[in-house]
Image (tube, rainbow, N blue to C red; front, side, top):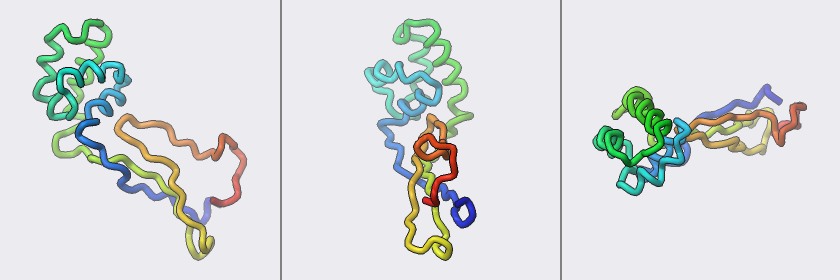
Length: 134
């Protein structure tokens, strides 16, 4: 099955500006802070860059562990999400069959991966046995 099938990676769904901070928080396992940051108007990464230090110096995040994790994530913001280098879309992984070997078999989307990352399993329905092609 692997011969004649390729994994295609392409632009997927757009990352909306209103969800940037939430996706950034998810990448650092800090999603629980999203409502707090949204309450003070932090939705986009640019909001975070301009107001992040103010948030860290306030009493908005009271739990010390969360505050220190947020501070660490803020220090990494420009390295992990540079102003001019962040794709504003998710990655779409698609199995693309060779039409010469598998005529009429359509491409199949495996998943879309956002900034928070994830795990892609190539074991359909949890089975490790070789499945029939597509």
